Length: 367
Image (cartoon, rainbow, N blue to C red; front, side, top):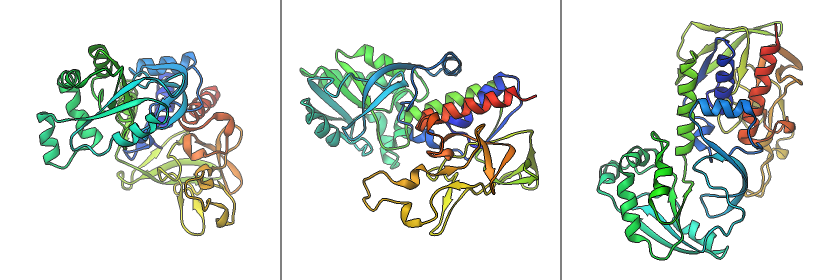
């Protein structure tokens, strides 16, 4: 249940091991907001590297910092191939920031302001391309709409940037390349006489959508059943064992299985839901690890870390989901629905992958 990073990794690993699986996915998930960096993961082990490689996902490992959409920097290590990791924030002397005329989801001025704080000179230029006029006319100047054109016209972009360059040693471009052709970011880098850095945009994330497409393609090639645009709505459970689930699209038909993996995400992805009185898990009614007093759910300082973002479902040592204090025998929870309840598994994308493999190992070890 859930077609994000955790669900896809679990599904692919189980299919590779000869299991028969189905993934129920609403469609949009946390991968659509993916920064391209796998938090809390060190250099991938052989199993993760092999899974990504078979899906066509290229990654690299370099401890340092990465450039964020508003010109700030964040520690990073394992990342997608087209995400730059720098030793420190001053990665260039002079930077040309290039945006597309009419595209408002790439914050050029914020980027420049942030970089200049680190002693980097910046110059902003806007590129107007006739190929984007149709997109602009329909009011669709969003990352995905632009990306659908960019893999076709990237050479024109390169030509225009060559004319713009002066004495800059680095060009910063929005992450709107490589949606369907993963080689395009590399070709752009090879074609320009300056270093090229791809900076994040407002969601949806082009690298994230591309990653989901690659994982889904690999999963289906392995024989997995992917139910796109559907949602698990309730489970049929008896004496601690779930026998089947109902979904929005299957009406009176149920999905039966030996085991169920809950990878529906946290509050952000609606895997958890809340009202003024409680936080709940909507499919199985699982126990949630959170304080009873609602005043402790949030920090009045809006910009500070919010406690509710760390709440998650309760599990036992093998990640069996807990309901009314009892671990369900064949239901597991993975990914961000765990919140901060299992810190040893990491955070963000690292939590998704580590918890997915942990449950896969448990399932494969069962007779």
